[in-house]
Length: 494
Image 1 (cartoon, one colour):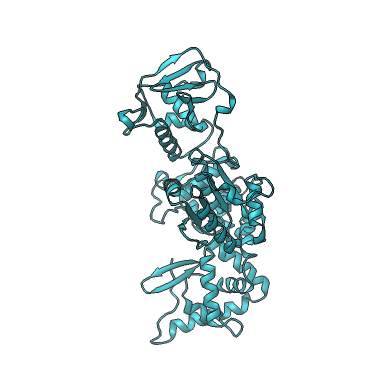
Image 2 (cartoon, one colour):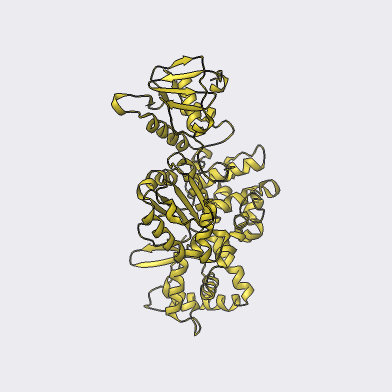
């Protein structure tokens, strides 16, 4: 299929009340320019050039994203944006139809005009944003991204929550990219990780929005915009106040936040980001079946980028599954592990998992410092804990499997860490996504991610308390197992 870039740039394509000026990359309805992004225009060009024919989704993606691997949701979002912009379905007019199992077709008559019309450059809409360029495709997040894209303009305030390395920023930025054309006054990323003082938050926001010195936020009252407040966890109270103030004074504003824990602001909708899907031990029957799991997809994609010719073979399935499982399905950990494929090969990677922080130190030079290595990401979270929370996190690392509050009290409580204080710290660590909660009947259990536990164990060993805590842990387990009539407080889970 030929690209529309082969069509003369002097041609104007006309359909219904619209004129598509190829040289200006501009669609006009009469004298009014339509607000369409570059990708949406690319999709429209391909469809209009092949008006009356069915263009498969694969062909559209290949034409619009020739050098990238993208998810089908990208195409669906741009098709939906085109339909809205063209008023598709209104007054009985139809331009783009979906042909089930085949693709899309532009069904309106198209007329070619050889005479271009010049338009002032200022009539061309350029999306307003400060989003960074995305260098790699996103894997396994179609459902989450689609949900956020649909809900955010309606709910106005949503927070993506999860542990470090889970991909909160990646998801938020992708959602922002897909919503660029929806917000008339732009989409703005506000990275709060670069400041630590709550008093600096408002100034940082005004600088990001490029407001003049002395301008107050009230001046933004009528702006139709999206703010992405990234890394809110260390400034929760200030962010809560700011968000509530902005949403009240700016009725057309939407806010997408990322944080280890909810902001607990009025009107907040929380979306907890899950790990990527790891195949079960019983699901290793074929390469095709294993490649249906997003954690494996990400590992293979990043391994291929690192080692030309990398292929997942049937004899590799158990090893790759174990790597993804031990890394908790965390995208950052999987990416960093796959980056070592040329040096260690699969067997070497698996052998190094017990020493995962030395393994996962080959960082991404283009990422923010806290995301360049897994240890850096956890350092950033750990340093913002209270001293009590740090101590509890370290000591709980002696638990190899899921554990209850009673078990934690029995093993690590002491005069300096009484039960009430310990339980409060555990609840806080769970809220901050450093512990996971498992609900089984009436009993709540806590669990570490493997990567977080390894990190906490290193800290515990450096404190000099590892041996003493291991002995207390062993004694508690022995007592729990053999005391007649006592309910077992610790249950091992796979």
